[in-house]
Image (cartoon, rainbow, N blue to C red; front, side):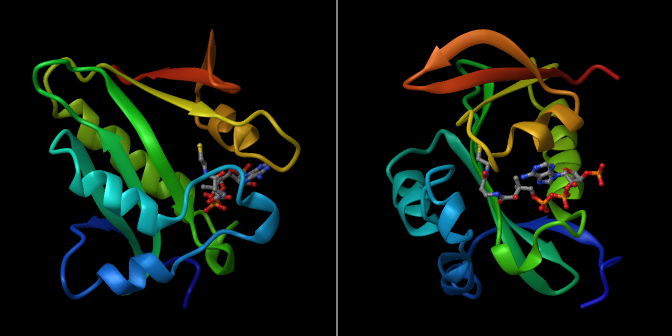
Length: 151
Ligand SMILES: CC(C)(COP(=O)(O)OP(=O)(O)OC[C@H]1O[C@@H](n2cnc3c(N)ncnc32)[C@H](O)[C@@H]1OP(=O)(O)O)[C@@H](O)C(=O)NCCC(=O)NCCS
């Protein structure tokens, strides 16, 4: 797989759902994100989410789940992961740029929120590098951050 493979976000369907379930983070990252099988079960139980597989070329490499509710337009990145075999190749940053593009198309989509576990080896430097800033709010031990999407 060339590291310059184009990153796309695709629907999760019959053809790729098992491949998405099989993606995983490394053992020391397991406190930072739920397994994809759990996220997919939660997505099944609510219509108010946007779920996509992250592809690099034709290979599934990650998963994203966003709260996406027309009645309450506050876009929250609920789950995001890149499989441990595919990290540090630029796929996470490219996928987040596509998530930002999607939110910009949504009603009131001028900012996006997320929360992260503040721990060594966690995703904080990744998100800060993408322009997220802490809001000062905390949810169950996770710190909330926001990124403006106007520019
Ligand atoms: C966080 C995560 C999504 C990053 O994905 P990735 O594909 O490895 O990230 P990229 O290769 O696109 O990296 C983009 C930049 O972030 C940096 N970065 C990525 N992970 C980092 C980390 N853990 N610590 C410090 N910097 C990191 C990269 O070095 C790169 O910096 P650069 O632009 O200066 O070169 C991935 O490590 C992951 O899935 N982690 C486990 C699950 C998780 O924490 N999810 C977030 C839940 S809130």
